[in-house]
Image 1 (cartoon, rainbow, N blue to C red):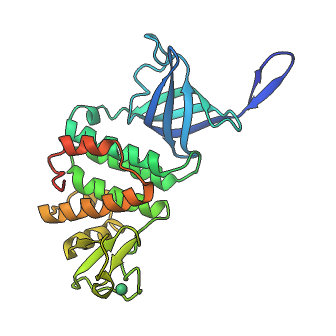
Image 2 (cartoon, protein in one colour):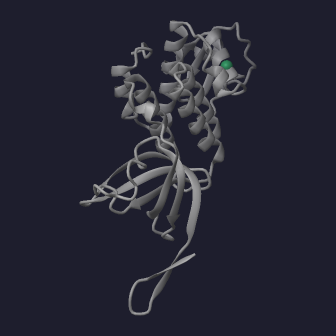
Image 3 (cartoon, rainbow, N blue to C red):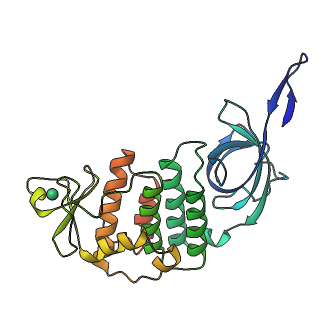
Length: 269
Ligand SMILES: [Zn+2]
């Protein structure tokens, strides 16, 4: 605990936290400061002011660049929601994520999705490690596409929005993979042939695409990154996951345009 003197003998308590964290966003504040958004291991998403971060000789150097993984020490401003960065020591800079446009597009999408789908200061260690692992695999040069899709479905499960992938979400009949299946973003899962008639918001899902989603919930991201998906299944997966995520967030993410422009694997649109 640190006591900050705010004058006239009044001191306010500022608890000090240390946690591993990844920079997932930020914007400039005033002349020389920056507000940095971190995804931390111990406290989930945290926003904090890095004083003087834009000065030439800032003590933070290049540590606050997007994707940097490090050890964060910050003062908690109780009840204010905006804390103060004391120190951010780089553990892994992930600089290669910024050198290839396609990798950059995918990595930017992963952090934006995490930022958009989580609330401030809700601890979720699983999400922290999911992001850390995904960024590591992208940096190693694994195929970004299956990693991004596996990341999406695991993130959805972790925040409590896993779509129904085993039974019809409307009539609850268990679904065999051979049945012609469809996915409804509004209903939040698969829809059997009987319940598909008359519905407009449905996307066809092949056995391969469904198999990928089910597998992604069980296997490691590393193994998912080695799966060679045919082009049609890639298109289906993008369609279905994007429609569902758009339904949940009520908007498109900004990085989607970036992905569409630069990612050659993004063929669905
Ligand atoms: Zn049904």
